[in-house]
Picture 1: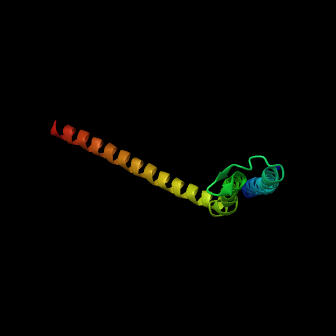
Picture 2: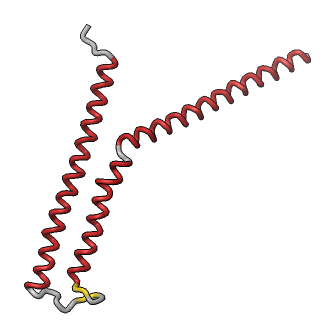
Picture 3: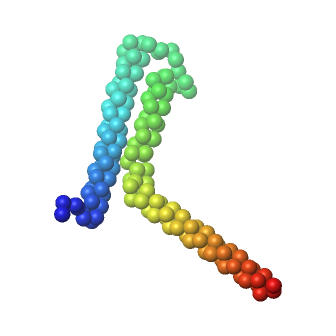
Length: 137
């Protein structure tokens, strides 16, 4: 009387899963935005340390000050983070995971059915051998 139908519980589970996925994506995007803010503030601080305060003014590499290389390296890490959040997760998101899961399930079911067929065939051959040996006797 008070039980929910299977369809309603399936819908609720799907909605819960979609909510969790959306929550994870929001956390990822929030982390990316935080990284951008840290990058901008950190780059400004590195420039101020070198040019305004004179810290490490004499340190250069291939004609560029050390802070330029630090900013370039940090920017590269930011680009990798951006790629992971904005590109990779879009193409390899929840739908991609579900497709891969369905493929793996299908392969597993095929292997199980092959094993079952093999077992049945072996049982039939064993019965046939016993019947043949009984007929000979």
